[in-house]
Image 1 (cartoon, one colour):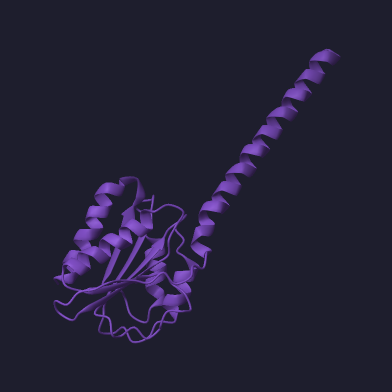
Image 2 (cartoon, one colour):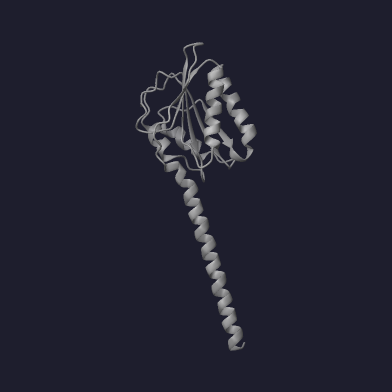
Length: 191
């Protein structure tokens, strides 16, 4: 091989290596950006959906993600509960929330799931929860992987009792999943 061909070959190899590094670092950066949503501590954003029908109450606590999907699912669960006669409080997890939540008839915890991991912010809050023995408990997650439930199982282990319901909502089926979330809230409210 001549010197000119050898230089061109080395130059081509260097360009390929640089391209691979740029793509790899870009992918890693994108992955870190998306998954960091689970660790963002939000300030309280309490919303109360009032009801005078039966005096029953529900609490929906969820960790938002990079898209609106987790919010839409949480709002739909809350709307289903509210339409069933429950006063529903919706908020993000954090130190500002009470840990004694025994006054709620239904408590729902929601997490975004990235690579099978749950939100550490929600996990920390759930591990401090007291007095939920008489509440109906739902743990739900939003994500893209249908057949991986490790985030739900992990959150369930943080409570001092098992949840009554574990549900996963798939983000690439958003329209049907939002309807399913409403139906779930409605069914829980009428149980």
